[in-house]
Amino acid sequence: MAQIKSAMKRIKTNEKARLRNKAVKTSLKTSLKNFHEAVEAGEEEKATEAYTLAIKKLDQAVTKGIMHKNSAARKKSSIARSFNSMTN
Figure 1: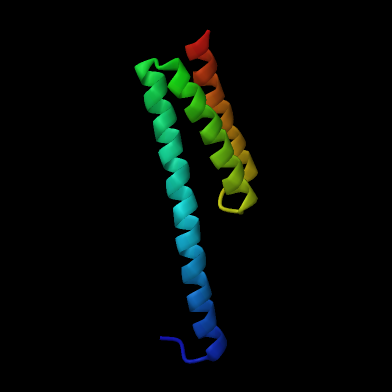
Figure 2 (figure 1 turned 60 degrees about the vertical axis):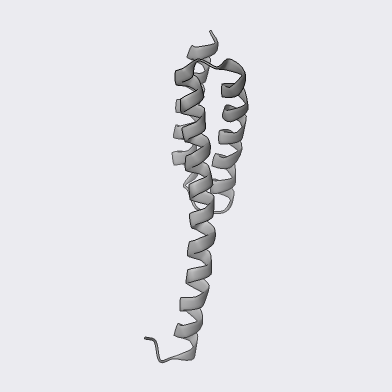
């Protein structure tokens, strides 16, 4: 265990950030999973809702610094392709 006061504070701060990041990542993964399930099932209305939510979650992850913007752009492009192929 840390002995220095600032190190003890960093441990507490890092734990709070880890839990906050974990919540955002979990939420993002769930929204992506829901989108892919809707596309596979062929449910267009459900896929549309899941698509907008997934895009929103990806943008939030970038804003919070949890995901790199290029990584999010790649995922958004990928889900857009699968969404467009489903609707067309």
